[in-house]
Length: 231
Image 1: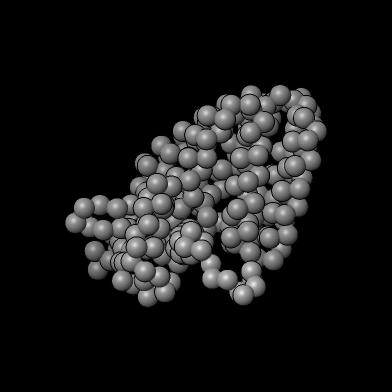
Image 2: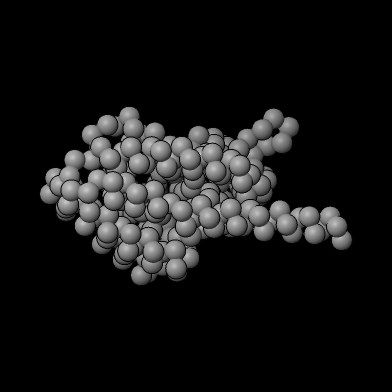
């Protein structure tokens, strides 16, 4: 039997189930607050209950899924106040990390970011949402690695995970994606200069489109609910 015809390992199968569930959540196929019923997910992905439960556990750790006793698993949803609080922390961490990057940045960091940005643009042109998501996060984590503090970068990564359900929808939004691409290019340019404050402010501004969009959608959903009750 050739290597290509060998069955995937259990780890690969588990990772694939988790990836498909995460895609369905972060790209809006399962709306915030939706219940994630194991039997339904088993049928959807052709997976065992064990794999589904493991995927739910992993996605709970990243902040995408919430599991509660007597309720089960649901897609995380956030109030406007929670969104503001989470983004406030992420913005503080982002600003600090950006200010700690020595400028001009090392040439190898700039070269690596240009490579990632090229991949990001290719995925964007192809409409590959998973590729856009992965290269976007890789761009930011690589950028912030320049601060030299891996503990700060890891904390930033955690908060990027918390905001993923809020920002992932915009990966398919043309205007938001074009803005993201332009801002990435400017970040790379700023890394070659000496203005740390401009870089830090741009990194914070970069989050605002997705934050505002999620807050608007949250307000719209709440208003629709109030109208439905009034009717």
